[in-house]
Structure formats: C-alpha cells, structure tokens
Length: 255
Ligand code: MF3
Ligand code: CO
Ligand code: CO
Image (cartoon, rainbow, N blue to C red; front, top):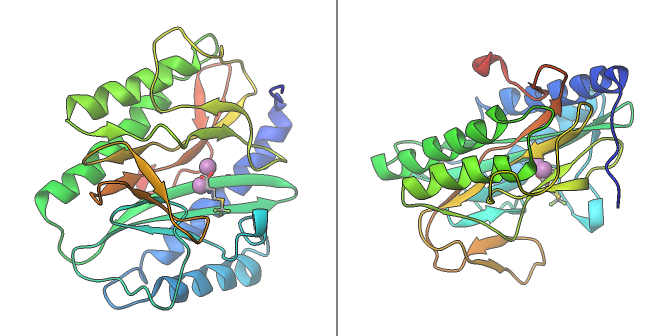
C-alpha cells in the first residue's frame, strides 16, 4: 500500500468537501434535541446534502451501509445506524459522523452533541476527547511521525484515566474514502510513518470511560464498549502543509 500525496490544488478541492461536511453538522445542531429519532436526523441530513449542498453522502451504500450518518449514542463507540426506534433522551451523548463527496473528493468529520442536561462526568469525557483530537492535530507537520499523533492523544486520555480504542483508527482520505496511512490514536513518539506535505488524513479518537475493549453488534456495523460504559469521539480531516497542518473540516464555531 502507498500513501497518495495531494497537490495544493487537490487540497483546495478537499477544503470544499471538508467545508460541506462541516456545514452538515452545523445545520443539524438545531434539530439534535430530546425527542427526535436518529432516523429523523438522518433524513434531514440526506435532504440537506442532496438538495441544498447538492453533493453526495458518502456513507450511503459504502460497503452496503444503509444510511447517511453514523449516530453513536452513549456506549456506542462508532458506526451506530440511525433508526426510528432510537429516540434521543435527556442526558444522552451522541456522536454524529458525516462524510460527503464533492467533485470526487471526500470530507469526513464528526462531533459530539450533549442532549438536554448532562452530568459533569459525562461532559468531562466529551470535553477531554475533543482536547485529545486537537492535541493529536497540533503535533502534525512535515517530519513528525504518526506515532507522535497517537502519543499525544493517548497521553492526554490516560492522564485523565480514560482509555483509547485500539481497534478503530483514523485514515488517509482523498478520492478514496479510507486509504493509507492508518492513524492510530495511541503510539510512541518517533514511530510509525513520517508525515509529508500533501498527506491528508483524519484524526478521530474514540475515548472510553472504562475499558478500551470493543464489541461488534449483530447488525455488522454498530461498535459498542464491551463493558457498557460511555464512549466519545470527535473527528476532523486535516492536510499536512509546508507550515504544519490545516484543518479542512473546521466549523464556524471553531474558527
Ligand atoms: N465516517 C466514518 C469514519 O470516520 C466511517 C463510516 S463508514 C460507514 O471513518 F459505512 F459506517 F458509514
Ligand atoms: Co467519520
Ligand atoms: Co473517518
């Protein structure tokens, strides 16, 4: 396997895809509330993507995945499938993960939503997970290693007595949704692959309140924590630039 390097022009195009993915999460903000089903949120996202943004929802049909979004509630680590049976309730946390394709290029991003009133220890998991993602992003520059990203994330998570999911990783992205390199959210400084200008990949740490162990449900997609404890995740798509990095999926609230 080899890593595709993107030109400055390619990255400009990926910025559009990334921005559209970010817009989907911004659009959904008002709707993600107590009482809505994840299926309804998915329908809203599908309509917004196809009718307003006029681009392609990448998840639909990807390895036979049935929906536009992944909606991962509470102990669901990732790849939760939207359903009309699943109604958001007070105190839930939910990760919404969206990938769109614009002009052949993918943009992949996710964020956590706190539903109603969350307990402080729950909010803390969500906040620290977001910090983990940014700590991973901030070490990125030409000459750094993928292991430096994992090290930064793992150190921050474990310092807070959380665990890092090992079975699912970030990934290279471009015209192909999931490509090399694999970005683990754990690791050692100086190990792994050396970063170069033009690499584009996601950083998407999944951080658990209890054990890092995962279990795949019978639907073949939904990944849950083995111990039933909470899990949080945030994701951005980033490009390695001459200067360091650029986040391609930044939302207005983050600028
Ligand atoms: N967006 C997820 C990721 O961050 C992948 C979802 S694939 C799907 O890589 F098929 F489950 F949608
Ligand atoms: Co994603
Ligand atoms: Co991803």
